[in-house]
Image (cartoon, rainbow, N blue to C red; front, side, top):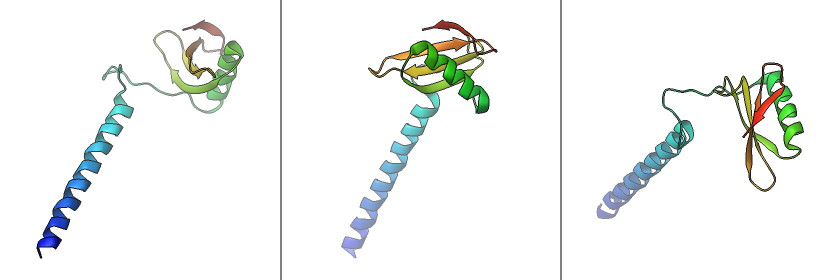
Length: 103
């Protein structure tokens, strides 16, 4: 009986720790370190994502698309490209997928 009770307590502690850890991970993914809680980022989708990605990669010359946003504060589309060395470049595009700036 004593062993069964101890096992139940340990199981409860492990389960609670797992839930708290998962909650912290979800919160970190949803809010980000510098995210404005009143601002929502809408990712680019479909054909627009393909076209925006092609335009961004043409500017950077290499890398992979690691993020995107419609209605960025600086442009109509923003595409985040991570270069082979790990540097991130944000490419701003207008509604016609023309580059209007990079960060």
